[in-house]
Structure formats: structure tokens, C-alpha cells
Image: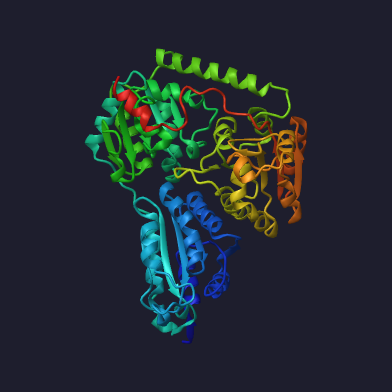
Length: 577
């Protein structure tokens, strides 16, 4: 038996655990790790920034249920990856970060990029460790995989000093560690199942809220059967879109505010009462609403609002228990489509769709958001994976671009992270290339959001990934300045650091030229006709493209019943009523 180096031991251990993808940026001391990973059959994607690499690796975890690896250099490289680790933890997605570190015999001496990486990474991960020796690397890799996918999924970190990466050990000393099995399924207390169905059967205005935890848990079959059997109105959170089709007759997303405000029983399936659901508090929810929550994470069950029934367990198995309970009852748990509750919801859905139709019929130029998204909507098929980020771009796009399949939407998520788009899109496109080549990845970016990770277009072109980027360009963050007014403003020769509004970006920035500089196809469009033609051409070719869509800088969302972000002032005012 010959000697084997640490990088090879690591790569082989990752491969044994089923790792298919590694995203990262190489440098001292991890170049050998990337090369060894490729030799072991792990596909390595070289990114331009560790943040984007960590976002990409975490997206694979969401799409597949098994982690990918983000490879980073020591010190600053790991610090950049903390963004993706935190984002993964907040969303409940598995990811493994492998970081190089200074040689162990230089610790405490001011070694190259020396940093207390294992200790600091604990703040951003479920598990952070440095193998005690080369021959024990497989033990730590299996434990890292297990920690990342068991319980509530999240980020883990493995630290390897340079001398361990380059060091060698006799291969006979390495103990094989078998692949970590998928997490065991957990069942709920039968008495809680009965109590939950008793509570639901007494509801007059029920509502199901589907969270991305149900999407991650592959619970689409049970969710569909449960909702359709009981004829329950449902509302998906943003990344749960597609678990049930957005155009399903029981979907009440167009009446979201009305449904939340008036429901008397809410069933939370893999969704948390965080800011996305307005903390579960008035004025967005009734003060006396009864909530049935199903979540894998027990610490989340009583958060913010005391639940009528709090159930820990996997969504699919718990829903199957609920279905079994319903089937065992003599009286059905089924709600009438002609009830007052459904009439209220359907009227609000109709009214909101009328308002949207009026906005999409606006023929003035520059386009508003709704006109642009209506053109995009008409050309996308149900197979597309839609990646979206930005403020109005993401929020309006969520309501305009339908999803019909689970795990076909990726966005800023629970942490509201801007800059995730290109990394998510790259991960989705690589995965589609290998497993579903018939699917296309569409990345819809606000112009501000695009600026965070726009250099990853070079990565897209280098790997010839046929992603279609749409930059919805309003010249600013939230709103911008028109070109003519900007030019007059500049002529006044004021100090722009004192006079420019913090929300302004350069008007009519030519983002499409970044794509063409790297060899992709770029389009600059101002009209619905130009947008339609450029999108048709982009979808008809298998190469990267970017469409720079100019819209009215003053365009905003349609009038809302409530502000999108519930403030403490809102809650305190309601407590006085």
C-alpha cells in the first residue's frame, strides 16, 4: 500500500459521501484540493467570489437534499463565505464549507492569513472542526455531512491547515467510512394529529400556508392530497411556489393580505412566523387566530405566537398521519367551495387581478414593472427554474411569474440576501445540465441586486451555461433618476457625494455589455416588442444571454393594504385596540 496525501484523502471521502459538486476559488493552500476533487470525479466550478460560491453550493443543497462543497482559501476567503453559510442556516439548507488555513506549526506566529477559523466559523455553522490527523479526515467528512442534513439542515465547516493538505499517510491507515444515509423520518404524537384535525374541522375560515421547508422535504405529494381532499385555500411562501401550481384553483396568493387577515385557523407547513409572515401578529393576522404548525425544528414551534397545536416532524410523514386520521373519521373534513369564506377570497382575487390587468395594459414608455413581467410571463414554460432577487423586481415578479413545479424558484429567501442570484443560477444551470437538460434557468435581477455578483457572468460564459438573465433596470435602488434629469443635474457641477440621492444608480447603465464582453449575447430593450423578441431569441439558443430591460424609474408596486415589512409600531398600535 502506498502513501496518499491529505487532499486526496479529503476528495475521496467527499466522493464516498455522495458529493457531486464543489464551487470555490483556489489559492494557497487549497489548489491541490480542487485538483484532487476533480480526479475523484467531483465536478469543480471555479467562481469569481467566495460569496457567490457559497450561495451556489447552498442552492445545490436545496435542489437535491444533499450538500455541495464550497472551497475557500484561508482568512479572507473564509470570511467571504460566511455570507453564504449564514444564508444557508437561515433558509435551512445543507452546505459544506472546506477552508484551508495556515500551517499548523505557524499558528500564533502571524502565519499567512492566520485566523481562528474553527472558532469563528462556529457562529456561522452547525458544526465546525479540524481533523485531528490525515487518516481521520473521512470520519470528519461523514460527520459534517450528517450534521448538515440531519435535524434542521444548515452549514458546516471543515478546516484543513496547509501541512495537512500536502502531508501524506500510508493508505492502509485510512479507515473507510460508509455514506451517511438520508435523515430518518419522524412521526408526530398521534394525540396531536387528532387535536389538529379537531381544530381544523371547527374552522370557518381555514388557510394553509406552505413554506419552503415543505419544498425542501419533498412533501409535494402529501401536500397536494391533503389540500385537495379538504378543499383548503392555500398560500405559498415565495420559495414554496410550485409545490402546488400557482394557477391551482385553491391557490389564494392574489388575495394574500385578505386571507392572512381573516383566517381563523392557519396550518403552517414548513413555514416560520418570521418577517415574511409578519411575525404572526396583528394587524396582518387576527389576534385570536388558531395556528397549527408542523416543523422539523422544535425550537421554532412556539416562536412569536402560542400555537393551538404544535407538531414536530417531517412534513410528508405528518401530513400522511393527518390524511389517515381524516380517512378514519365518519364525518369528512371538507370545506365548501361556495362558503362565505371562499366568496370573500374569490372576490378579492378577482379585484386584484383586475388591477393587475390595468397595469399590464399601460402602453406608455418607459414600461412599468407589470408590463415587463407580463411579456416575460407569456414566454416562459412551466419547466423553467426562476431565480429572482431585488426589491420590487422580486416582489412583483413573485406575483406575476407563475411556478408549476416544486423547487423551481430560488430567491433572496428568509435572510433577504441580495447578491444570491448569479450563484443560485449557476448552481441550477449546472444541475440542470447534468440531470434535466430540458429545463432552462431564468435569472431575473433588479439592477441594484445584479451589482453584487455581476462578475459571475464570466463564470457563466466560461462554462457555457445557457442562463437567460433579465436585468429590470430602473436606474436605482427602489427608484432611480431619468437620464435627461441626470444629465442636467451633472451639468450643475455639484459635489455628487453631497447631492446625489443614496438610491440613485447611473441611468441606463449598459449591463448587457458585460455579457457581450465575456462572449455571451446582450440585448438593450425599451419596449414590450423589443423585450418579447429578445427573450424569444434567448430562449431559442443554448448560450448565455442578458437582456437589459429599461423601465420607468418611478414605477412601483400596485397599492397594498399594508406595508410589506411589518414594523414594531404596527404591532404596538394594534395592541391598544
